[in-house]
Length: 434
Ligand code: URA
Image 1 (cartoon, helix red, strand yellow):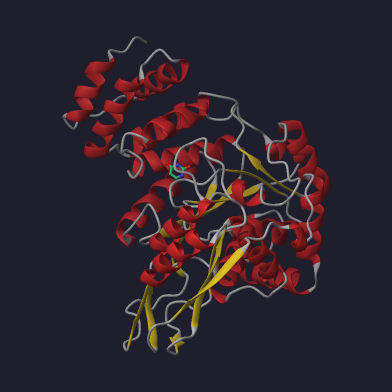
Image 2 (cartoon, rainbow, N blue to C red):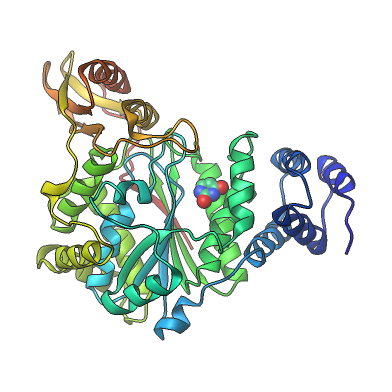
């Protein structure tokens, strides 16, 4: 089929629909390099304003999957395969804890992860703070490791969904990232191409997330569940709080440490709750034949009997890393942030903490930037907590005194301390969409 791209842009701009074939040609033509960036950008902007319906979103996802290879991980392992994905937030190290727990319970966990984007951190960057750890395994090595030890987390290979790689880079620089059908198709095309039978999604909601409101998060969750269903996969979507950072630690090595503490039942309460809940749901969707309550019991047991920690160490060694926490890089300057009044922490802005960590060197300003794995912020006081005047709210881990002072100011500004309890009463888990 031959398409006339300006006519497709115009039709979408005017609120019309595109056929499945037109969407397919558009995506495949763009991936081949036949359709230039400027036309695809204009189409994305038209979609930003006029949206895509369920059929069009499905067609887009399907074309993105067909732009590259697909992986049959389930067939290679002879097992039902489960996967998880988060839409990204501040302090989100969930996969680093969920992976070892689920694998320790006997369910293979092979996941492809991404790098940080803007103020949000990426699992691969966090893993690279472990000396020697390799994120770039070949597909054969990946499958062999999941078979042998039950756990591998690697970078997305360029062969899977190349359309998303190109389209995402374009969206990132044309203000077309935060639109539901494009996010849904971007995430689900990668999950479906990686071959999972069942997927637990974690849609973050709040000021540190792409989805700022619960209504938008719910629409995104419903679209992703629908895309999964159309592809014959089971999808459960958690809506979780990203108005404040997840757990205490924000920053690569600091988050690895917190993930390891959490798989040995010594993690912060909100992060522990999310990790156990997501693990329980993954176990329920697996071929173990357990319900969510039994899954929760198994997950908790793996954190208390040492099996999750043991699995973590085997996994890190298998990918060339040193699993000892002493091997993690440490920032030379650690500066305390003190409360300037007594009261209750009413707000702890996730976005502000994410940006403070980015400015300490933990994030990228441009695509090729190196990240500093040692720096970050540990927020020991969280929303709802009562604090004294002069109490330590957080620690800033910095490369030098100057950046520490700047970050300390930014972290203090992220805290709102009043005499009133916070308005939001929900815990980390706000809702579940199935
Ligand atoms: N994460 C993705 O993988 N894609 C998006 O579009 C947004 C977040």
